[in-house]
Image (tube, one colour):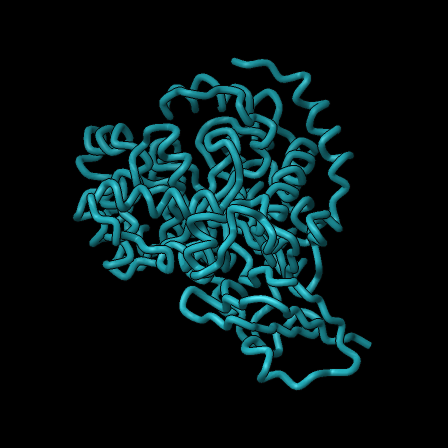
Length: 436
């Protein structure tokens, strides 16, 4: 018979606006049964109690865009613009090295990094995604796993004519297989997918009842090219095709015109912003404050380790807020509470999981993170939201639970043999050469 688990002994941040200085969260099996003041909880004799000794108790972070298998290519081709980085380095490397075994092992490494950094939910989009789904399932993370679609030969899809058949098989294989895995589709972009492919992906996603996503307006080069070829911006192109209102998540949106924001809001498209990757590739910046003002749901993502080069969502929160402040010349722009919401409940909304995770309230799943209390850079503690956004980093995570299962215990992974995973990925890396 299951027992109630109680986590107490520190401040409890249920969401960006709800704080209990002496908090307690209790859950039984997967579901939170209580979240509030420790003084308001009736003690249970048979409960398992975890005293966090002053550490901050908070919701698990939600990474709304990642390419987990790309941990293999971390540092392979740095300091390059997106088009050169993608066409001259990433696509050739992927063609040579990506297969189902690679995606499983390298995604396990991504899982280890994200779980260790407090990410409990991720949306991963790539190729050969059966391997990635196996890795997420094995790790115990909550994941939206989207299979990539593109118009030229790709890993696992040597014949583009069979791409829809292959991705449909992936979705069918994983739909309803695990309560933690949600399969989906990912049309790479408007410049690598024809109007036919974009429409086919949209239609297939709707027929299967799964989400679909695409990179959209990531760079001004992409925008200018779309205007030259189609006479409009990428969001307007999808709108003219009748597809924008079917799109679940637009990724990046770091080169939007004002009219694009209006279209996204009108079409109820959610946005996944990846500040560090966008800055590193000099792609642009998502206007997060403006998107939120337009009532567009915005989540944060790390993108892949090849263009970031880490999967630390704490860093994304901090940089997103700082970027907004400096570009608007306004220190009040995108305050800590707003960006914390984007990384938690806002991210869950972007992925359609807001009833499941993103905040600590009774009835939701027990996706919980506890930070260390004794790190010098986390002392003193006046404002837990500010501390989480402006001072904390992934290395400060002590405990992690997903659906009530403890996946990180005092900094140690409980479901992943990190030494074996590191060895497997480094064996692959030994065969990879820059420029391959």
